[in-house]
Length: 279
Image 1 (tube, rainbow, N blue to C red):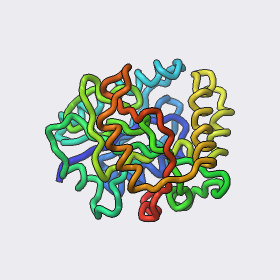
Image 2: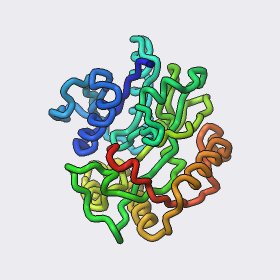
Image 3: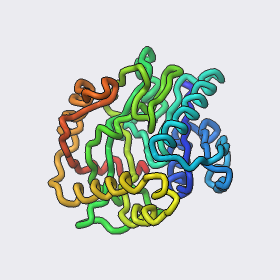
């Protein structure tokens, strides 16, 4: 089994941090989790016990500049982890969860360890989970999120280069590896939960600091995902995730040869019940 670390960075998001630690800690062990807080004013919550934590100074920068600063920092931390003997490093935002299909009966480290180690990185198919306002109530924090949310958009944006198998430089937001191609693995999914609850998004839209840094447009796009999953007819998971993976592994946008594309299709699927107890 490969020795695998996971890292993330966050600011003011203890809700998802607790779930991030619970998921990756259950898969890798908390001693292999590395969590960085964006701001010396941030408090380390009790859920981080047993993890490696650190803080950096928060700079109030426009979204793109802030993203670039954070990813350069995390790419350098990943290089250090490889130098310490890790054979793979997972990097995600705190609301993103890399999950092998439960039908495979494999843990996350077992899945990654079985993959071709000659690749620079591995990706899960992007699953952008949204609240279906016609059917789903506000999220209950004490319950698994996928026991409460059944619909998602198949998203090129979240088919990220989440797993490094070699020391590399991530692009902003883990969306790519600079100068390298990507490979979306069959049976691996990156679940994004930023659109999982409308009230949580509204609360963040009232955060003056986020709006000053240009996050308003990004948060409005999340509401757009909720609107889409609430209105669109849900498609079959097995058929359309296979279609999306095939497209995204082959199609590239003209502006970025190492990012996935899917003809701008907006596909909503129903998440199978076998994922209900994962996160």
